[in-house]
Length: 182
Image 1 (tube, one colour):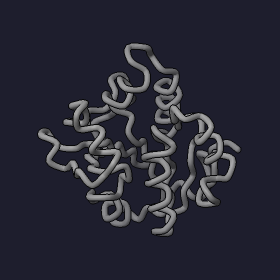
Image 2: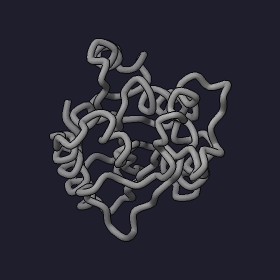
Image 3: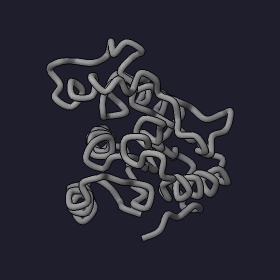
């Protein structure tokens, strides 16, 4: 199924590009350029024609890792790496001045941010989402969004996870029936 850029849902929708940031790309791809960036930029450029908002929530544990919890297994394993002290988007990402950015202290882009309130104040009820990683930010965020009654459309070509078996399983099941995969 492909994304319908002229569908009736567009008027109440936003594009949410999650964790397309410097540290994520450095960990997963090193110095190698990933085709994900080009695919995501193509999505962003096609989306901009709709005139609807583009949002970039990125993982951020604080400049001194002040948002890190020792009780969180994933986060406590990240702290020694020194990463995620900023939420800088990936270089080359198709960003424009009116785009909205969020610094997220957890995998879910909704946890500890004003994202939900901002979306609701704009009358947004449909989220077109893409992100890295499928087993992390994507799973956490779409689960939250689905539970909050958003209509979620997940752009498969712009999602990635280093665990390809888990990635495929999640997409095969539509993330437990929570999303429309496009």
